[in-house]
Image (cartoon, rainbow, N blue to C red; front, side, top):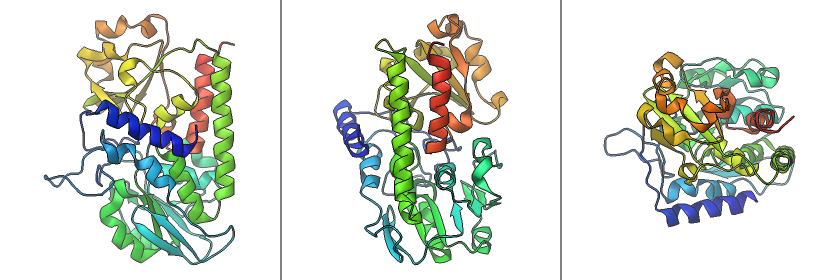
Length: 356
């Protein structure tokens, strides 16, 4: 399915279903849901009445992010500068091909590295300030510019960037200051619109052709995986342990898009066009499927993994009994948010699901 049609379908399904999953705040969990929600839950970038910013779960603005982002970008011809890039916060002129790029999230980091660009600055995920292991080979030596939730504007300015890439969801309140430092291009949000975000970043870098080729290769790989799984594909649950919560990831998430692209079915309770729903150790039986892939965000000791997986309900799940409940890398399956991570997830899925 094309990027534009997939986003439109998401809106229609969300409206028809009248989705209303519980919103959460705090932390930094990747998809922009509960993950570093410094910026608004909606596409507007407005905070809630309490001054805190909540997760975009349910509602038109959330589901429409992919279609809206697909309409952003530039009309400039390849190789032409200056170019104007339309994005979530307006229009930004980029006078020359960027040479010193600062990225404000893992998704942007993945995007630029996949296009052969080594960023000079990077805002890591809360609690994990290193370079993601799967990106180290092409990342160079970017300087730390604060975390996703606590950007260090002085550190960013000191790097003398000529382009800053981020998202409205993460840093809408810092956009004005950032744009005084360097041309700044923001997507609406990280997560399920990762393909559209990739093309937006590529437009700013004058690397659209390369990005389209990478996405085409990914799509082909996903379709091949689906074909190799045959007609009777197993159902898959994506279960993630986070500090204070246990989450079942749904269709409008980074991992949800990958499973959709491969045609891998989900249990009925995970087919909402939304980010995720939360369960507790006492309701972990809602995770039942042929396969369960579990991630842990942050310190496992601070999560509910031990209490959930010691529960008799967990031990009686179909996947657990069959030895098909597997731990996966959080940094790619949930935090990656880019084509490099998505490609790695497809490799992992093939290793688990395709019979040797």
